Amino acid sequence: MEADPKPLTILWFAWLRERTGTGEELLSVPRHVATVGQLIAWLAERSPGHAAALENRRTVRCAVNQDFATPTTPVHAGDEVAFFPPVTGG
Amino acid sequence: MATIRVQREPFDPGAELAAMTGGRSDIGGVGCFLGTVRATAGGKPIVAMTLEHYPAMTAPALARIAAEAERRWSLLGCTIIHRVGRLEPGDGIVLVLAAAAHRQAALDATGFLIDWLKTRAPFWKKETFADGTEAWVEAREADEAAAARWTAAPVR
Picture 1: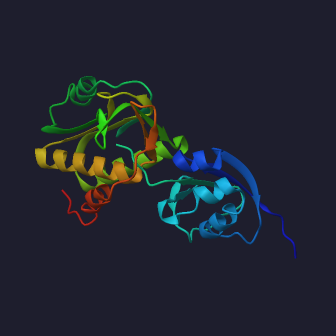
Picture 2 (picture 1 turned 135 degrees about the vertical axis):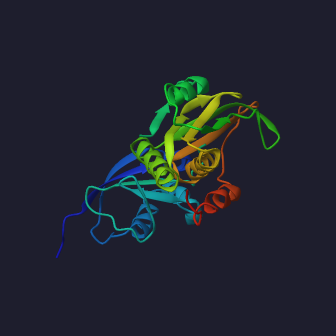
Picture 3 (picture 1 turned 90 degrees about the vertical axis):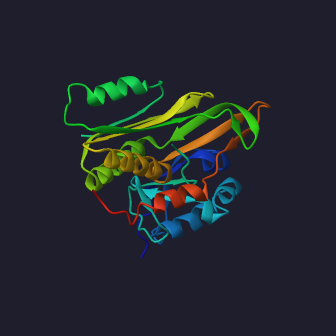
């Protein structure tokens, strides 16, 4: 049966933002996208810029609802999912 | 108890030290780390460093790092101030202060705070070179190694 897609807020920072061309997207994601890893695979198909931002997964970090996440972290409707390079503050 | 601020404006390390220690006689020592903008990167002169962050996550991430320091050491004060936006060579980027009854806890907590901040707080630096080109700073393996040395760290 066809369930509703889930709404997610996707945030991009630093050079990932420059490659996708946007800092924030409100997206409806298919129900079968259940984890961060599945979301990355789905997002990489959205545009050449998204593919370029996500091409080297080793340099991509993620936070779900402002907490560091891994490829197996679940994503739920309404979550804020941020993608960024390894941090370089301090 | 920790003082945590993320701001565009400069900070005054002396004023922050005075605020931490004023009127206190229980503190025996304060550790201080002041990070500043170097004028060169990879041997090339830079004219600016621009710091971006993830506002909704930054303050909670810094609060978690401070809470972990307070769990590991008996701190009598803890301050983390981090700037964002456009900075120039010589400007302060980050100030970390940790106060304790004795120096070892103050110094160790200061080292822990800056090492964890460098690998766990969502800030990103971009350098603008004198020739107008720009480059994002890449994370250093050495920073991960410095943070990792605290994972098995004993407490006091």
